[in-house]
Structures are given as structure tokens and as C-alpha cells.
Picture (cartoon, rainbow, N blue to C red):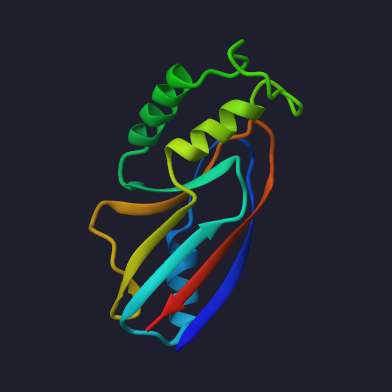
Length: 137
């Protein structure tokens, strides 16, 4: 059986947004107990990550690292049509990932104790994001 649903998520701008509970809700609604959960963000300036979910300083440090690696307004970039965060957001999404495949175990995401799934918004202003969840038993 295959089940698919699209989450429509609003972000407040750059940062990480835990979507683990939404994934577990979609899995529960599907009735699938064991299988695979594929998650895909339909944008080129946002990504998906699995990260520590207990200590928010981990995600804070990740953001500081990416700011150093790919700073907004870097004169290296020509693509600035939507502002100084435009091309850096694209690079950040490529360096992280736009999709994840997770196990479904006992009707839930088979994440480890300290893991969470996050939508990682790379633009500085609020955005509307679509995340496609496809489940297969």
C-alpha cells in the first residue's frame, strides 16, 4: 500500500522547524505499521535534516556554521534576484538535503532517542513550504 500527503507549513524565516510529530500523525493516519517514509521538500531554498532534538544549541551551532560557510551577501554570488539571502539559501539546501527516507517501525518514524526531523528554512523572511510525505509498506 502507498499513502501520500502534502504538509503545508509556514515558517517565520531562517531556522529549523521540528516536523517529527506531523510525520508520526501522517503515518498513524495511513495505518502503515512497517515500511518506509519518504519526505521531500518542494523548494530550492529549504531542506530537511535529522538532528538532535533535545538540546537546541545543536541547531543553533549548525546555523552559525552555515552562516560562516555560506554568508548572506557574499560577493561571490551573481544570483541575488530575491535579495542577499537568495543564492546562499540555494547553496545551504544543496549542502543539506531536500529529501529523507526513514523507516516506519510500529506505526511511527523509526528515529533514535535524540533524533528529530526538521524542515530547515534558509530564507530570512517567512515562507510557505510544501513537504510531500510518501509512505510505503
